[in-house]
Length: 355
Ligand code: PEP
Ligand code: MN
Image (tube, rainbow, N blue to C red; front, side, top):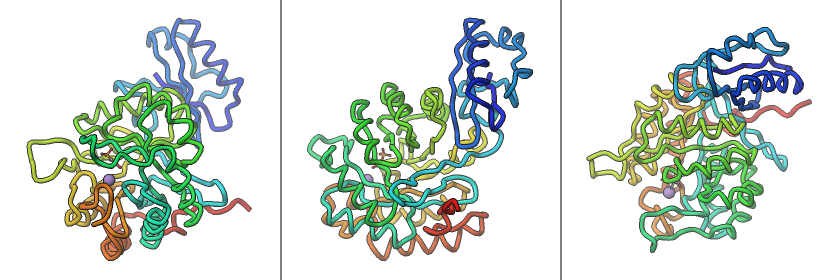
């Protein structure tokens, strides 16, 4: 069961609901979103019914949810959520959600200041509004470039300030969440860590929006349950990212599950973006797949870019360089309006400054 508080409900009203729920021996988890506070109830549904929570001050709705994921389900919030990222150091707030098509781009790995700055400029020129860049690289081979670790964080932050873009980076250990959250505007949970539950708890508590990638072998329900872990700890600012799943087809490292987008949109109110880069592992497939991503109605696309992919320390074969990034940006500009979305554009995605 989920209690949706009215906009403007006070903390005292929220506390009163929690206290009443606890009288039954149940537990209540509060999530404060941009526009509303919701309280997820775990316990005996019949006992909750008897509490008449709907009549309490500040309560807007009490909803019975039949799916195992509750807070992230559309039963609890029938609309579609918008997640706001950034807004620090004079940089814009970026909205990811219905009506927008957001380009998240940047180097797979932060290698050096120059390479990160050049990648960031490339991403921005193409209209990216969120800069990505990895510090903790999770590869199958221990001999692959594993990233600069914490020492690279200030480089990404510097590139974000230089280009005026908020930044997202992957965190792969619960102990790194705090230092990473100091630099990043959004925390990425990579495919390999989608069910690292200790880390999901830590990420949820960092008070930053989360980009949650789908695990390589995860069902949609498992993916949404991972999101529920984060939501249950009080953070509803979650963007889901489909990045391909393992199938029997060997021509690409993963098979992009394009049908996951409308499926998830029916089940969950969270925004969904798609990463064709890591699904395909091949530069020549990124643009055609990105076109499919726009057409299917996703909220954005995430890609690796590099000023010189041949010299990239990791994922060079799938990184887009200058002209390819521009081609992708032009496809977004042409196609996004056809599916009723603002094409990617730094200004279009900006939230106006408060007057
Ligand atoms: C990434 O985005 O850098 C990445 C490694 O992706 P994934 O976790 O989806 O493999
Ligand atoms: Mn990569």
